[in-house]
Length: 231
Image: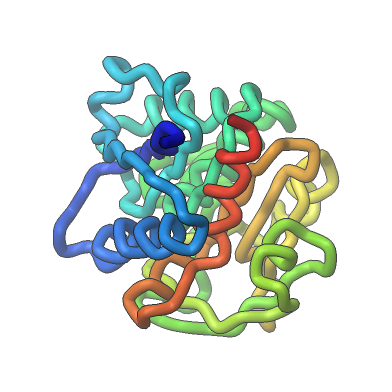
């Protein structure tokens, strides 16, 4: 029997968070679809320094910002990006992934998150309209990892957030190795990926919520497939 796929979920678990209720269901559905045995380790951010993530097959930075240990989350994101570890980020995971990239790849050391910071470049800023418990259409770039996972160029997705990419910085963010591959109807950024990485995808929307409607999450399946392929 093959050994289980080891999945690390980085975030501070809250039983009342809808996404946190959905994530185990989404992983369970994906494991059945792929006929895999998985072991899931939910890692509180204040325990990251005591956790050896190198033993994981894949990492997901889950919703729930601000995290109890923001610096630990940024270090985890940098490690996943630089090491080639299959990575998925949703909601807060997306926001922090964008900031980590801006700081450490673009050299924007003053990149900040408006939820927790003052001053500097507010790369993550308040949304013009709250997306707390909202749904909306998302359009995917043809040929992107997100589009290939979904097998379509658009989807209706759920959110729980008040912050997103500041439009003032979106073009500059997407001009380097990071690609903006998902946008809403207004053109605002809803998903990014690194094409030269084995799997590095982050979305403001919470694809895991599909499991609450008894549907598969294409991104969770693709993330686990990438982990399996790498192993």
